[in-house]
Image (tube, rainbow, N blue to C red; front, side, top):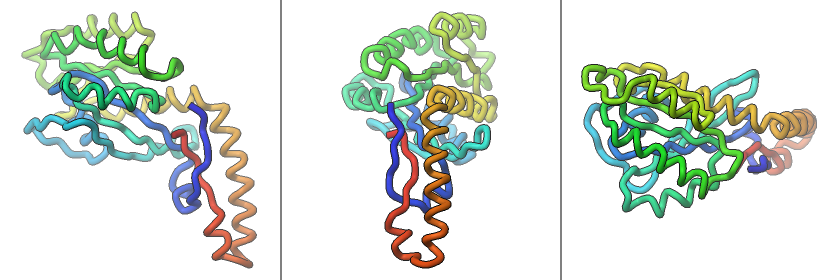
Length: 222
């Protein structure tokens, strides 16, 4: 998806580019717990299913670029999938999640990947995550099985635990890196333009601050 500018210099000072990530997987695999652990450093063992779709934001710095990620947490239940599919085409990155203690959730990754092939942009980046490694004694899906499936789709693979905060940051950071790499040329061009604009805006601000505040910009990959 093309990058573009949106008005708001104050936000541009906080991040350089905005990407949208989408979490997909069956209900109960821990998508919401992963997201809360990553964005809020919190974990709640009680499971409340997401209704429809929700999102959270976090800013990462990668190779000197401040990346704001908007992470959409989708409901895994069948009845909500008509709603969630509307968001596929707007994503730059996909995180497929299954529960290592629930083999059917692993088997259905093929179904989720098929939905992405049908509804998401062809250039969308993807990773595969096997969650709940803190429940090793209940494991039904081996790490080798997860790695093999990821390899068949050309995806990076992680095993994580939202409960113990294992590989959560690493997995979200990796998908963000992949999206940034895929859009690197666009980002470089926009950052160069933004630097020039900010320099000009800074000079204007000294003599006419109100006018500068009304003509400022930030970058978005909406």
